[in-house]
Image (cartoon, rainbow, N blue to C red; front, side, top):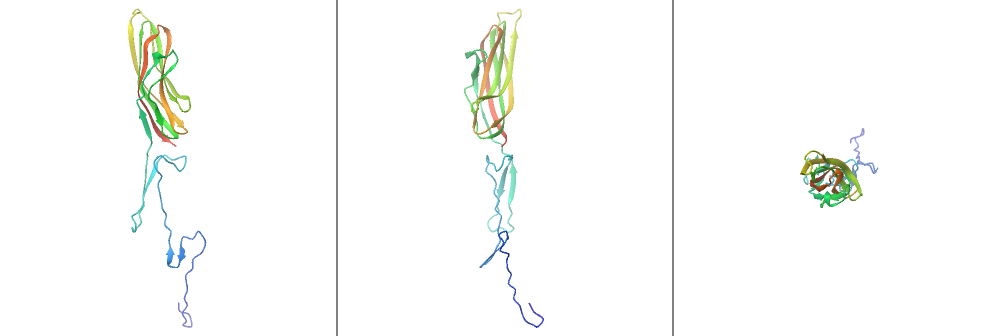
Amino acid sequence: MAGACGRTYRIDPRLDPAPCNALTETASGLLVPRDAVAGIAPGTAVGTERSVDIDVTPPAAGACPATWTVGARLTPRFAEVAPGVANAQAVASQAWAAAPATLLVPEAGWWEFTLEGYSAIVATTPWAVAMDVRVFNVTANQAQQVRRVQYANINGAANGTNMELQGEFSVTGFLLATGPTVLRADAMRTHVGFNDSTSAGVGFTRLGVTKVSD
C-alpha cells in the first residue's frame, strides 16, 4: 500500500495459531477442513433413544457444490415362526405343554410380540375344561403373557355325547430383551369338573415380534 511519502508497504496475512482455528496455514497454501458425515448401520445405535436409521450419501469427488444427501427411515427388526401344536392332553391338568418351535428375538430392546392360533377340546358330556396359553421367555425363565382362551362347562340332558369345541385367539404384549432371547408358546389344560377331556391342544399358527425401541 502507498504511504504518505510514496513508500510501499507489504503486509503478510497471519493466522491465529489457536487449535480451534478453522484454517491452517501451510507452505503450499491454506487448508480448509471439510466435515465428513456418516450414518449408522441398521440394528446399531449411538444412544438409547434411536428409533430410526440415518442414511448419508456423500457428494461425488470434486463436486461443486459439495452436496450431502441425508435421509431417515424407520427400520424395525422383526422375526416370526409357526410354533406348531402343543398337546395339553399329554400332560397333567394345570401343567404347561410346549409347542415344538421356538422364536429367537435377535437383540436387546423393546419388542412387541403377537401369538395367534386356535384351541380345541374334545370330551364326553358332562364336562368342564378350560384352556390357557402363554408366551414364555425361555432365556429369562419367566412368562411374558398368560391368557385364558377357552372354557366350556357342558352339563345337560345330552349327557354321554362326545363333543368338540374350538376357539381362536390373538395375544399381544411387550417384551424388554437384554440381549438375544428365546420365546416359546405353551398351552395348559385345566380340568374344572365332571368328565375330563379326551383330547385338548392348541395349534399355534404364529409367534412374531417387531422391535419398537432400543
